Image (cartoon, rainbow, N blue to C red):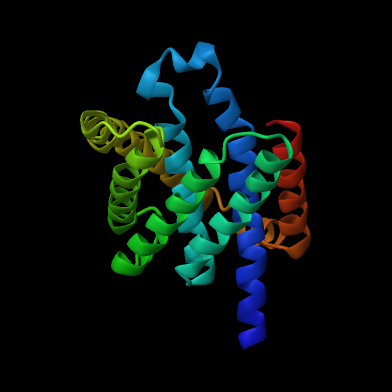
Length: 220
């Protein structure tokens, strides 16, 4: 039984962690394009990517019943990103962000223990995790050589309140869309069991994780 649970955690982390890495490499890169950054916080990786990553961590928790799965996902995604940053001499800030996201989400899950991702407890878990993440990430955003307190305070207020509010609204919208899909699936009797067997198979998990590694190296 313990071996089966460990394998469930392993393949779930590979699947959801791989999806997180794929989103970081594709959508995350797109959101950092100059033309997109003009939209500010309304098209920022902070308000779009972070909620998606935390929803994936929530889904992984539901599949494994282990809050540590969020930590494992963060370690997986951050490890691959760190390799890329080291090889191509890029900033390691994204690595710190990924690890901080996973730690905040794990702590929020441990505190609230939501039974469903698409629920008010699930939304509360995200709000707690995201608020903690944005408050702490403020200190990563400030250059290590810049010790001006006023800049830290300004960033803290901007990200913890303004960006956080937009992220919460987006999360509510994402959740509403997914809930609508879930209702349609039940209403029209989609073959969910067959789909789940394919999605949660070891082959799918390994494939998604492999794609994450390739895309992270190719799109950097």
